[in-house]
Length: 192
Image (cartoon, rainbow, N blue to C red; front, side, top):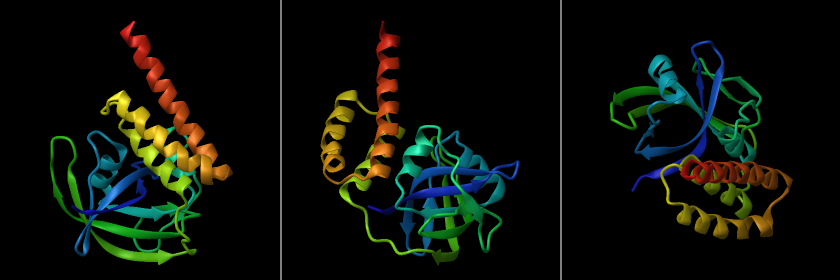
């Protein structure tokens, strides 16, 4: 089983703007592998630009925000590739695509690391931060998962949030739960 880095991927849009998306990036030896879904902005940007930046942050609002329409996070230029990174990330990795294998759902982009930098120390995630990241993953897959499983996982994740969340984690949790509630309401209405 591959080691997966949960991070925020930034890519450059055709108009020069930045696209920000949470993703799990696979480590394979010296390479990192990005597996964007079809269709997606990340896929389009990788195909056109051939570069991406991985951003490591302990502000879980970025994960939640990207899935709930809040993707306007401060960015700045990368150092080696023509790209952008999160301004307030703890560290970042600049990548160049070296190989591509098409797939019906998720093409595979193998990348080499061109540059890495640390901007601030990482002190680890508390349980609430981990719970928000896990809930963000659930939210990105609401259309694929049985609702009973979603409810079960949310119940468990809520324990960590209730015990260790600060204001940023509570805000991120609320954004994601609003998205879950909205999805469930729309599913009920479509069955009526």
